[in-house]
Amino acid sequence: MSRIFKSLTSAENALEKFSGYIPSIAAEELPLKDALGRVLREDIHSPMDIPPFHRAAFDGYAVRSVDTFGASRNNPITLKVIGVIRPGDQEQYNLGELETVEIATGAYLPNRADAIVPLEYSKRVGEFVEVIKQVSPGANIDRKGSDIEKGTLVLKSGTYLGPFEMLLLSSLNITHVRVAKLPRISVISTGNELVELGSKLKMGQIINSNMYMVSSLLNGLAEVIYRGIARDDESSLKSLISESLEDDLIVTLAGTSVGKKDLVPKVVEDVGGIIIVHGLSIMPGKPTLIAIIGETPLVGLPGMPVSTSVSAIEILLPIVSKMLGIRGEIVWPKIRAKLSRRIASRPGVRHYVRVKLSKNNGEVIATPVRVSGSGIISSLIKADGFVIVPENVEGYEEGQEVQVLVYRRWLEL
Image (cartoon, rainbow, N blue to C red; front, side, top):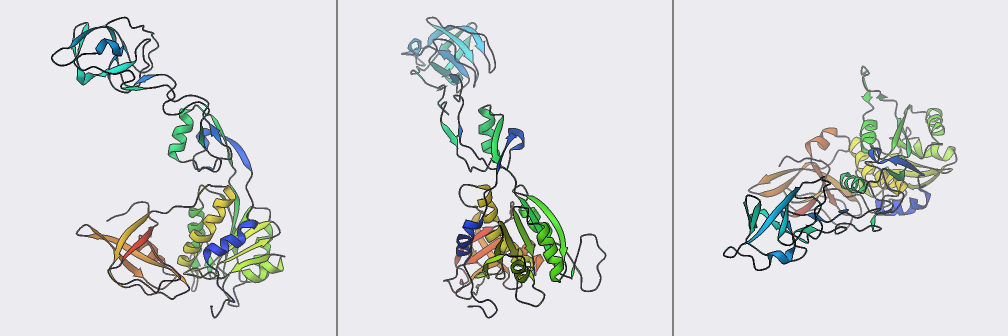
């Protein structure tokens, strides 16, 4: 139990409580070229076979396998070369007895050919080739439909379209796909101390930097509408929230704790909202709030930068993922490492400890950057990820192997 919150809820339970309030985003059809990073809203069945024809899997000679039976280094079989086929060639060949066609990887198979003799098992002699190893029917051939058969379910609705999904869809000659629209997410910063990027700072002022982090985290998943800075008075915040009620989700930054200037909970209720959860059993990130105003969900993130980051990862991203209908859960890279020193934690609260990763004699080492201080922006840059200490664990000892959630895309080890 917290001294300032009536109760604390785990991130998992908070999302479960809020699940029924999360709207599903409508769909739209897009050209495939514009669909990278979007979420499918239809099942995709293959309209064709892949490969669409029998093709060579190796450079060599297309043969009737029966013509190679008995071939060996000591007893080569001589075949007449009647042509050459490269990928994209259209000329048709019909193999007769003891005839072959020189063929390149990916080229279509000539009629009556049922195998490929790789180059290393052949020796070219003018218009003829000596085959020194027999091949069986189907050898070194990619059969029509052997990769994907026409009509096969290849992608399910809810699939996130990454580079390999784009490869598949384009290989199937699919020009348009039905995907979830990008949700419109209003972001409202709060606080008298905030000024916009590029401002000349006066005493007591700070740059509105959390907005840039949250917008970056949502990049590609949503259309972010920045509504501006709500000052520490109810009318300012109420006005910006009211302007945002037609959007799919509202995100407020700061103002969710229990101080006199933390106005988000009161204003949410004043405009008819219902607070579903206020206070998470995570550190940093405890003052997180989730609410519903009419049909519009609202996520109130804490104001301290590390708290904002952790809550955005644990709460905001899963909510946006559910809105989009993405199958599965968000996966962050994880690395096993040994702790360079002890990590303390308080039972009943999940701790996110920033750590720097390094290598020592081939072993990965995790060094805590700063155990406390949710406003220390530099700790996120100096660190490579989080060691997450569960609620039921009282810290980790020096030398203990732990799992590190890595938030960097590239690591210097």
